Image (tube, rainbow, N blue to C red; front, side, top):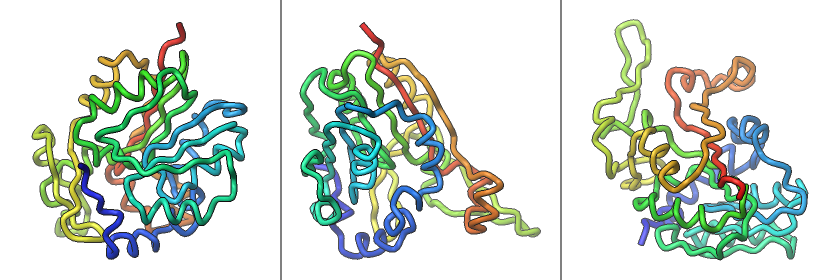
Length: 245
């Protein structure tokens, strides 16, 4: 079973203070980029893997999705999502993505935000997603960028002039990483960007879009805290498609 760190009270309380928790999708600086690549959701069936507070589930309904399923391992996250949702077309379900099962040829869109770097058996998950999509269906996800997850000790290095650099030692050594973010001992999985791509291609997906995301000049001006994010990609955004039959 995956580590259920989001049910750790210290982690959960810290996560609740993040702008993406307080402001929802508008508080996630990568959201405008994601929004620009989403397909037309009118009448679609959608599943969100790692739905958290349910922000995307509710957004999908606002965009016209007919039915949305949000899945998360955390009881605390699901409880918050249910508290914030009044829509019978949105269902929330507790699910470990390591053992995910979905009905075949059912979903027009599978979505996941900043969750896949917690999953150990990614090949199995991609296979499950592929068979669950309808012909021509899309899988859009974000994950922590391998440059961000690579070092055993994540943190900025600064030279004598104060220039920040992000270490990439250990990049080619895939596997478990322990991060002390919001709580001690958060387990993540580091894998190279090529591994993500090759696993998707091996399942039969066609790559539609890849963005090694960084903030725009306008975003940095509006939120100076984002300035350091231009020095290395923290996340990447990918869209793939099950070929139309």
